Amino acid sequence: MSKALERRAKLREALIEAAERAIAAKGLSGLKTRELAQEIGIANGGVYNLVEDVDELILRVGSRTLARLDASLSLAEIRGAAAPREMLVRIAVAYCDFAADNLELWRALFEHRMQPGKPVPEWAISEQMELFRHIYKPLAALFPQRSPAQLGVTARSLFSAVHGMVALGLEHKLIAVPIGALRSEISTLTRAMVDGLTAKKE
Amino acid sequence: MSKALERRAKLREALIEAAERAIAAKGLSGLKTRELAQEIGIANGGVYNLVEDVDELILRVGSRTLARLDASLSLAEIRGAAAPREMLVRIAVAYCDFAADNLELWRALFEHRMQPGKPVPEWAISEQMELFRHIYKPLAALFPQRSPAQLGVTARSLFSAVHGMVALGLEHKLIAVPIGALRSEISTLTRAMVDGLTAKKE
DNA sequence: ATAAATATTGAGCAATGCTCATTTTGTGAT
DNA sequence: ATCACAAAATGAGCATTGCTCAATATTTAT
Image 1 (cartoon, rainbow over the protein chains, first blue to last red):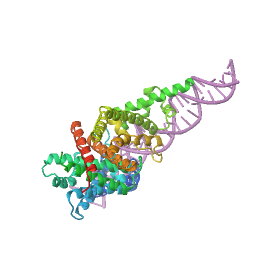
Image 2 (image 1 turned 90 degrees about the horizontal axis):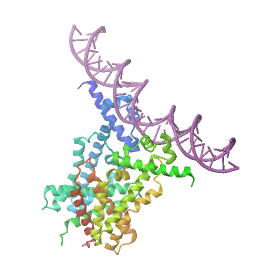
Image 3 (image 1 turned 90 degrees about the vertical axis):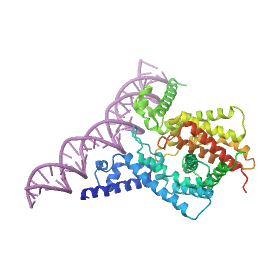
Image 4 (image 1 turned 180 degrees about the vertical axis):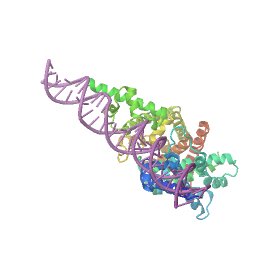
């Protein structure tokens, strides 16, 4: 690989990391291309030699965030075996903890909108889908009679519900719920959802 | 009231309505003060005689949206009596329908962030809180032994969970779920949550 | 009618994403 | 090493926006 290309790759990494720090510190709206350029020592316009768009830049940062989130959830699963029900609770709480510990980066995942007309690239969508994977396995154990498609639907519903609790719970706009309280609400409701879905209809 | 003040009030109304139309048509990011000014026939700078900020403008639009949402939920409650469990399902589905029918305005409620430093005004926060009111009454019927504070927590959790399902379900970024499927997923999970919370611990 | 108060205007500022002609740097052949 | 060509970096500049404010026009009070 030529020296020029190596340099480009290094700069690209530096740019993405600088963007990640900026979002973590000041939120999505605190991301300024000029500041990033200055931080990594290139000209203003140079940003667009490394990246197509700010959209792409944000998506790249999102990719890293998703990877770390994925790792956090995996870690939660590995730490000791548990019955499927408690495994789901553990994953939900791990999701909550990750969001709390990475608030702005986690928010950027959901707040970002592409500039009008540009669709979200396929790779970014499939990365998000991968998240459901974590819920899928315990769910399959709990509902052995359900088809993969049905399990997929249930997984998405469960994930969405927990996501909603985390999103509104961490919102400063509404009353900020203490993290401990949020964790226990999430545990309670996750168990309730599992129990309610498991219960035989009468 | 002087002629000048009447005029101001009329213009203010017109401004808020123009902003509402703009958001409904093009989303929060499609809101442009210059366009609004032109639409209601005042100078660019005139917008700031009618309203402090775009923040305030968006909050005013949000207030109207919340009022309509509140009316929709109330209507869902009134249409025939039902057991508390089914009442909660009905409210959840009504929430989903409102969001689908007022997508951009509903999104603006949650996507908007105040400009750095400005806190959300008290009146806007309490308007949001009023939403939980709808869930509170059926919940109180289901859990007569719980304290008002406990009921409040449960109401927020339930609301958040349904909100999450609607938010991710209507996201175009992920696979857009057909509205009918979303409604039935919401019904299923709402019943599951209620059942799970109701079930005696064993 | 006239002066004082008030409201409206729109040019202009600052911030920001992005472009592109110009300049600088890197590459490869002789 | 030298030169010619390709590739990359630069930064001035454009377009868009929210917002300001001195100047102007309008309303109100006497």
